[in-house]
Image 1 (tube, rainbow, N blue to C red):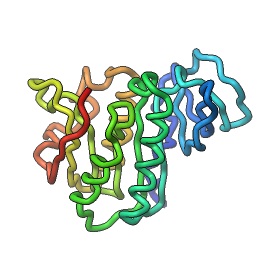
Image 2: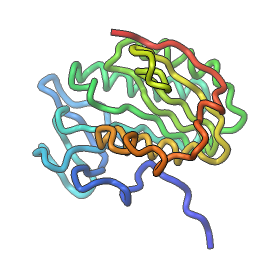
Image 3: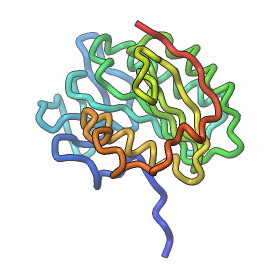
Image 4: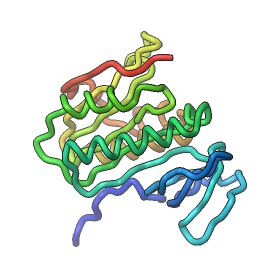
Length: 209
């Protein structure tokens, strides 16, 4: 039996308070570029919905995920810039939205240029990309406070090599973001016993307010 490839468009674990689709975020200034995956509040009115295609106001959005099959450094920059531009266009509303990038295939990741791109493109707190999954094993996470909770603001991206666990960490952290920290309140149920900080490969400072 073929094993299903993990996908950020996995609705099985989403709470009833959230829906998933694709489409556009609409402000009074116009619409965003098309979002591969939009996670939005089920208790908020939408401007238009037909099947999975939705047009939603910024206040309804919980997360925006850009999805790529494989990527070069140049295409990585393009994807990060697209997400950052969406965040900047939404203004203060973007601070409550998780921007994320999911890449199915990536091999022998060199984190240094990728972290530099994040730092260069995400120059505003509203434009910070908080989660990046690169293939099976590489993962980048934005920490507003330090992983041990002792330093705030911390504002760094941490890059990890996690054997065959990147997609799992991405999906669980995305669920945590759209449920306002419910998962983080019970980490032993959702995450491995050993901290991923043991697999830290690189880190870089990001924007602060």
